[in-house]
Amino acid sequence: MTTQLPPTIDPAAAARWARLPATTSPWLHEEVARRMEDRLQWIKLQPQAWAHWEPVRGGLEAHAKLTARYPDSACYVVEAHENQAHAAIQSVAKPWWNPGRWTAPPQHAQLPPDGSVQMLWANMLLHSAPDPQALIAQWHRALAVDGFLMFSCLGPDTVQELRSVYAAQGWPLPGHQFTDMHDWGDMLVHAGFAEPVMDMERIRLTYENPQRLLQDLREIGRNLHPQRFPGLRGKAWRAQLEGALARQLASAAEQGRLPLTFELIYGHALKPAPKLRVSAQSAVSLRDMRDMLQRSKPGAA
Image (cartoon, rainbow, N blue to C red; front, side):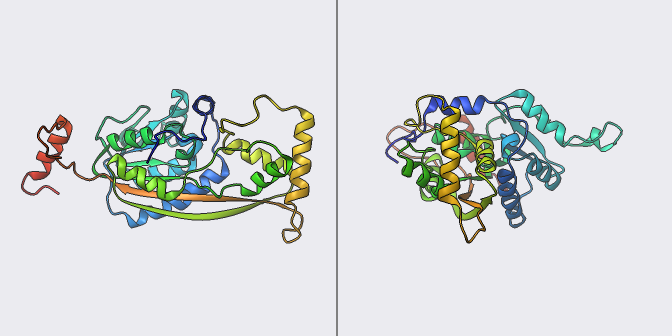
């Protein structure tokens, strides 16, 4: 890892995208979350508390499934907008007349305290982070020892068809470059995670027309490349784009529908017990010392 910030993400553009309020979850994000949630059946740990990073964009249906999977676990909902966090919490709240409403574990609209959660869930978020290593480090701090991280993001082969269309027109790239899953694994280890397991699959979607294709892309994200078009495009350019998509992507094999490929990366990693680095002068944080002492007690897991 030679640099901390991705060279093809404009931090200002990424910040604007993060500040845009979201009201619905993209279909693709819900589908990815469904596939990721299915993997939890192989994990035996039942968290006392878990955190969901940006559930509105990541998947409100997934938030409901996770709440149902861990009915006795408290949850921290982390959103850029407090009203979105409350919307996610209300989406799984029981009706006022249901007695279970008063006994259900709390869902908090806030960052989890350091070392307070046993699972952290972040679906389709990391690829748009302007400083992913800082975000991964924040996740590491939030997790308790032996807690685990579950995340997904887009990979480098995403929307290669769209990139070909832009290249044929002589336009700047339609989006920033996405990080390879092996680099994500390196970042996890660098942040202190252990046993990272990375997996990848490709989903090929087809669209009936350019308008529907562009609508899906707009729900999924934005072009964060520093060398993107420097200003707004007009109606004439939009018509040119739609014509190019129709001409270059239409496939006889797909009966005239327009294909787009999405590379999906899934990651899972554990937070191990802190290790004391011994040198001439060693410094250990109080939290790390507490964790090491706790694990050294007889009967500790």
